[in-house]
Image (cartoon, rainbow, N blue to C red; front, side, top):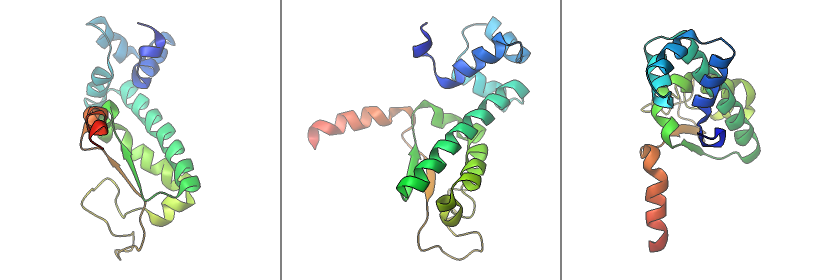
Length: 153
């Protein structure tokens, strides 16, 4: 497999294993090919190394989204693709980074961005404008739906 074919999560796992920093991942990789799903499953089982990878992923994604929120001031950001399946592993760190780095997001974020049902501001009053970050309900099929819709438009 070429390195350009690897997902960021798999690449980060391989780098951690090569540096000798992920014995749990080495054991998992010995049983077969390492995938983003297997790293996610290890993280959900409490593997410290796998959890560290998703925290780092959330941190980097949070920095990117904070910059985009500051520059573009969009009302909604939708995270799609295969990584959206691992939302619970990276989202808390992503939201921490966004609050710390984006003035726009800190001022307009819903009260609890991880609770998709809540839309009130931190003091409980409805906000006039919110910056919502959510995962796609289409998951990794979003691109397929978009491509299928394109000829109809």
